[in-house]
Amino acid sequence: MNATEAQSTGRIRAIFEDAGVRGWLHATPLDRPHETIEIDSDAVVPLASVYKLPLLVGFCQLVDQGRLDPREQVTLLPEARTPGPTGLSLLADPITISRRDLAVLMMTVSDNAAADALLDHVGLDRLGTILGELGLTRTRIRRGAADNLRALQRSTGAPDADAALAVLADNDRTDPPGVYEAANASSGTARELTRLLSRLWTGDLLSAEQTHFARTTMERQIFQHRIAAGFPYDGVRVAGKTGTFGALRHEAAVVTLPGGDAYAVAVLTLAARSDSRLPRVDAAIGEAARVAVDLLR
Amino acid sequence: MLTERHLQIFVAIADERHFGDAARVVGITQPPLSQGLRRLEALVGAKLFERGPGQVELTPAGAALLPFARRALNSFEEFHQAASAQDPEAPELRLGLAPEVPAAVGAAVAAACTEALRSTRVSVVTAPTSSLVAAVASGRLGLAAVLHPAVLDGLQAGPVTLLPTWALVPTSLVPDDGDPLRLGKLSGLPVAVRPRAEAPAARDLFLDTLALHRPTGGTVVVTDERAGLAMAAAGQAILVTADPQLEAAGVGRHRLVDDPLPVRLRLVWPQSRTPSALPAEVIPHLTKALAAS
Image 1 (cartoon, rainbow over the protein chains, first blue to last red):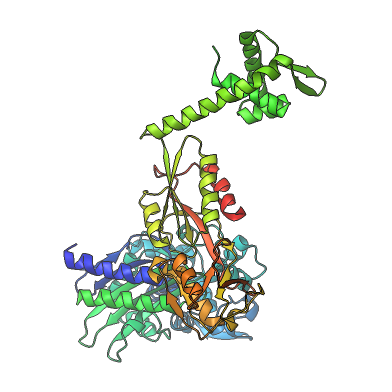
Image 2 (image 1 turned 45 degrees about the vertical axis):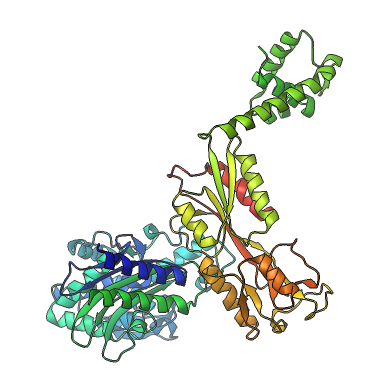
């Protein structure tokens, strides 16, 4: 690491400190994978909904291999759907939908019900094998959102998912032990997330058709408050996946500048405060991504 | 040969009047306690206690020797303290206290450290939460009481303890009637706050809560509570403090309705595998001292 680089990771660390978070970051240009900006990028961190990114890649691979039909219709009954703040999780009646549309909802609005249904089709074992073949040895998808909420309910002793999340959001209480332990959840590292994104974007993971599907779906993500907020220009495209659970706030994204230069960036954070809304932290994720990309330009 | 242990046994039985309790006080089991007493009686050449049914009484010889035993034990204690002060290799616990920790609370934690870690020297520093967390992480401090929430990177932490706060308000703004006040009504003067960089997350939580209840009135940055108290005495600011002893002429002390701005404290210490780690069994004792005070 040269002096300039040490200075700029210092800048990113200062952004994290000011926002009151522990932060992990990895950023790399897609065409120059040996150039990186890193902060604790090999630490294994619970991924929250960022696990939907490896799940999407696994799904698309199975489609490429002809083992899953993306057009097959599935019916999801309301009582069997995972709760969540967006998408099918909010709806009251039975839904019939194709698998690929589940993937679209999972990635664009982080739909927990859609993601858990898709995870059922892909399977934890098959997904684990796929990630192993990709060389992502530190990325472990252990469970989806439904099991995650059940585990949280167990460790908090709360009667339902909302009450369990309220325990996590209380600044006056100590977090139940193990809630933010990577070993208990779907977890990964900032470095492996950018490696996955880089390989997805350069097209050597999936067929041209599935690469196109994955990239365009990720460009349609509605959440703009994290990495995208660091690049407030219509000419910059940000295709990402956020993750939020308790004090965890993450995003992994590919940032494409007007000239076409593209960068894979993963910013993972754990906030000191428990509040469920911390706009300062969301903004800090954008700032950190911006500093990293500017340094790599 | 007369030893310190003989004297401990003698004094403990005299104080407790019960062999089992005395053994617990000395930290041994009952058989070695009885054996130690027999040896001491042989050395002295007199019986020290009469063991009656269900009770233990000093003999006249025991009563005569007890004050000397106490004095000798005190001398032993002084010797141990002097020796550990001389020995730079003696274990030392460096305790850090955030400035928001009220003086009496910090004192209680320090006292609990001495009690729990005998023959360990305790030294105390005061520094902002962000400095304390870094110092504990690097092993320069063995324990610290810091503001919660703070980023605790790889540290062990005890439960969150809430200390209620008072508003110290100039009597020129609110009469000193001791009545609880609504935070929302305290908009006439700025609230004194310490610099944000000292503890960004805890300070933001304070400021966000303040702004929710009290959208106008503003804040003024002060270096410490003394400066805040002086600002209040000068009729320039309101100080929110957890310290029950802070007072000044012309400043009234009021509870805030629903206690919206408690001081949240937490003990932090290094991971157990590090050399400066505290023995696990003392931790509950120390966290209790923080919570009880």
